[in-house]
View 1 (spheres, rainbow, N blue to C red):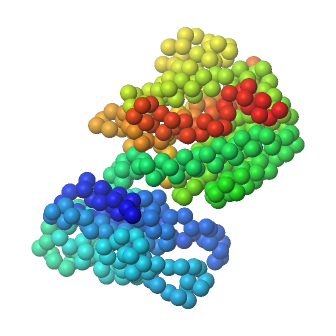
View 2: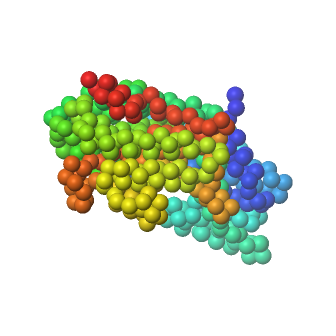
View 3: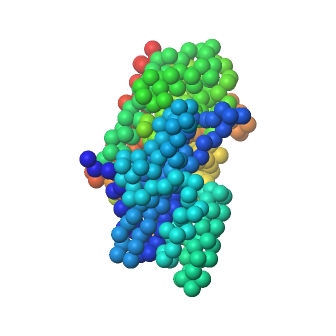
Length: 431
């Protein structure tokens, strides 16, 4: 059976200079209070390259003069007493046997062993600035290496973020399969929530319902803190208070997605709490939906990552003109950024192990073209707060529609199309 993580390590190593090294630290246990810890979640880069899910671990890749790649892990030591309390530990032997590492040591030995392993390497790559602890450790390990042989060549430090991130940007078949499952779980939860919601419920009640629907389908954890925003709360882009009552005749914006096998999904739907859009709500909604559908059409290998953004801005600008909210010509208003009072964020972001996934948006000094295997969100919105200088009928309306889009050789595939976005379909579902 193939080891996808070993393949990824070897691929990363093949892109590095001869006589270089990569150091990727895993996550540490995070405590909520006293000795009560949060559920452990492995560092995304570390997981991508190792599949090893124990805290306080470190991965080292060594590339030699012949571009051969050696992978080494520092992991928690085997400890039968601690396993009684906290569960199985692979230990160094298990890490080599089950995860394909060439060498593995107890993590308590890293300060002693890593300087010797780095000797003879000219460059060390790691995610610069991501962890102050790792920043300091890298410097100390390099200093210790140099102290062993003052006549050895200098060891330069380089940032590994783009190299690992851009490898993660293109999803392989295994990743796409997992992400499709994550997206389906979340889409089904959104469908059930539309049928469940009623005036008089609270945002917190709906948040709990989503998390229940995720969990019972296999997505135990949310990929991010859900946004459950009734009425004007939807005009706060990162609203997470999720505590207010849901009122008749208002909209509910829910931005929520589960994590499945450490891969994220990310869906937003905005729907009427009582099951029926008002005329002003529907008018704004249809502008956002048109912007989303036309932007999704632009997700293809023929276009770059900004093309959909510009399309969404122009559709929304024209829609706001048509509704009398903006006045003037579309081209002039777009050029001046007048739409930003109502649509102030980007069209989307990469999606993968992180909800805002790793990977660059620029390539060779220009915006990156889409490539097969990328997954991006497409999420235009219009947000009109009560302080906006508009007719009263528009005030307090916040709408966003978001889907997860896989780039294919032929165009794209909407991984979250199961949950309706057409307003008539939403109303029919909620009837």
